[in-house]
Length: 164
Image 1 (cartoon, rainbow, N blue to C red):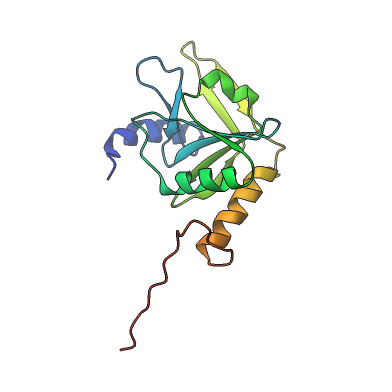
Image 2: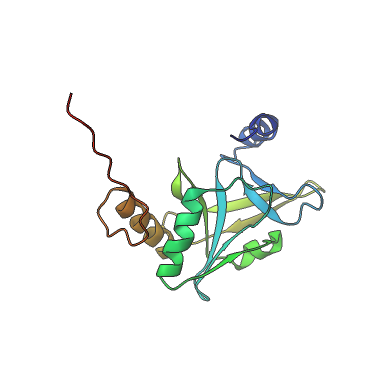
């Protein structure tokens, strides 16, 4: 179980400013991405076919993210679990929030509130459109979850429920 109490105040302040979720950076330098307040962070570089996610020890492990990493590999993506610097946001084509509750949710933009009070806005994809990789990963994940696709990894287990 996570410790969500530390998230209450920053999340409330972000919502007051109109932001639906927060993106957490490393506590020491605030230069590398950790995770969203509600889910794991994933970035997609479509040109280089890369799936990038932070490997920080402070990030809650996610079965959904691990599953998506395998799906991305199966689709020919290079998967990188590594430090992700904030400055790299400008280079990504798609950004996703991933986790049990959100599955694969596209992030249209990230606004960084800088120390001097200014904002830096990073935008991903075309407004109102889902990215191709977002659609692919979502479709593949949901098909596996619903038993509509072949489970090559043995993730699904049939549970027999006895008749009462």
